[in-house]
Image 1 (cartoon, rainbow, N blue to C red):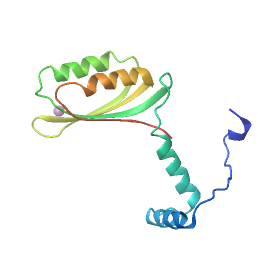
Image 2 (cartoon, rainbow, N blue to C red; image 1 turned 45 degrees about the horizontal axis):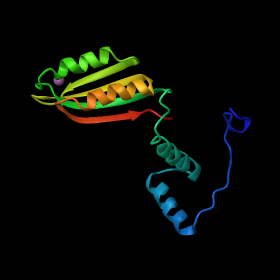
Image 3 (cartoon, helix red, strand yellow; image 1 turned 90 degrees about the vertical axis):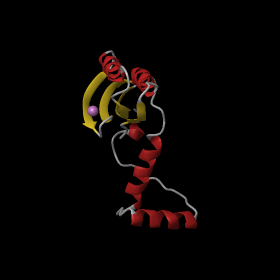
Length: 138
Ligand code: NI
């Protein structure tokens, strides 16, 4: 890593239109931020988390699915896919939402390419009613 980016706080100047700054100050007041720097850092992190991580990089992420467990073979397919996943299933939570629907939160770690493969296989299964994957970026 370049010396400039080693773990320390760096001050830099930002030029903004006064109207945009007024809006930003209102935004940070509503969000209860104490200072602009922390608010800007959080906005930057939020925006950067939308960038797709490199396929070979190792990531941790949160997969959330809702499915109808009555759908034929769905539960078995979900179990099979997780057992054959090349990365690690760190934890999973299963909640029976109602008579037919289950919510599962699965925390996974591994190469982005393997996680994508797992996600792509799960998302298309018949009976999946909700699918969401969020890489953890901080
Ligand atoms: Ni259930």
